[in-house]
Structure formats: C-alpha cells, structure tokens
Image (cartoon, rainbow, N blue to C red):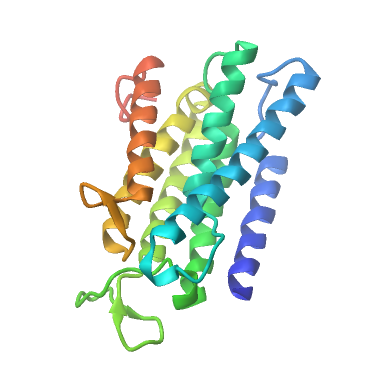
Length: 236
C-alpha cells in the first residue's frame, strides 16, 4: 500500500497547486467569510465520512475482502461531499453551482490516484475481472484481468484536458456547468467500469457503487437541465 499512498500524496499536492496557482475564482461565491470557512469544513467532513462509509460497505459485501473492516472510496467522498454541500446551500440559501473550482483538482487527482491503485496490485481490491482481451493484465497471480484502474485514469485525464479548455475558453460556462458535467461523466464511466469488477451485486445485478452512481447520474442530469444547459454539447 506504500506506493498507493505516494500516488495519493502526489494527487493531493498537485490538486492544491492547481487550485492555488491556476484555477482560482474571480470572486468568492460566498461573501461572508465565516460562511465560507463553514462551507469548506462541510465539504471536508462530507467527503471523509462518505469515503469511509461507502468504501467500508463495499468491503462488507465483497467476498474477497471480508478480512478488511474499513475501506475508503473516492465515489463515496464525492457523494458525501455533494450531499453535505446541498444541505448547506439549502440552509444558507445559496443558489447555483459552487463546486466548479474543485473539478480540475478532482479530475487530475482521480487520474493520478487510480495509477496508485493499479500499481498496488491485488491487495488494493480495485482490479477487474478475468479477461482474454488484449487489455488483460497479470497482477501477479497468473490471471489476466481488466486493468479498470487504467480505464478510469485515462477517462479522467481526458476530462481534465476538457476542463482546462473550458476554463480558459469561457469562465462563465465553466462556473455554471462544469461541476455537474463532472458528476455526470464520473458517475457514468464509473457505472460502466463496475461491470468489470468482481464486487458482490445487490440489486438488479448492480453493486453498491453502481447504485450510488445512478443517484449521481440523476443528480447531474437534473441540475444541468435546471441550469438550462440544454446539452453537454451546447456551444461554448
């Protein structure tokens, strides 16, 4: 797990650097300083609790990982932070997207973090099911498996490049739509890759991650429609 930790640290540092030096808001979306600090605390708490709860639930239902009690999941972090922020926004009456400037760090952070999952091998429990395709990779047990970590890493890297383009092309569009586009893209690609993982299914042959992905997909679509985006291919 040491190599996974190193990649996690790299993703955190790069995310902080991007937020500090590149992707910075022109104005604060929360003017009152105390509320702004409360917002960031809410984001952090929601992400931490969501990551641990959903990651641990998956381990509980996973046959191959019953010996591990506590897990973590980036999907859980996104779900937890999103729910916490939506509640916070309702309470303090904030409208519109507030998560745009988290997206670049999230996208590149996930891309780098998944590389850590890949290099951690079998012990990370993020590998795919057995395959005979040309993409099959032997993680050390003599079985060719889908390297789903790399699939997700590549997808998020492409999205990161798209985010950079949108940021410099049209800042207003970026602030209004990019968070919901991130939610929709991340949840959709994650839902697909989960079919290639050996996790225990719960309902309709879907695992616990896929059920939460469906929730995020509906969330993203609802808010894109609400913000009058019309389409992800809308002219920018």
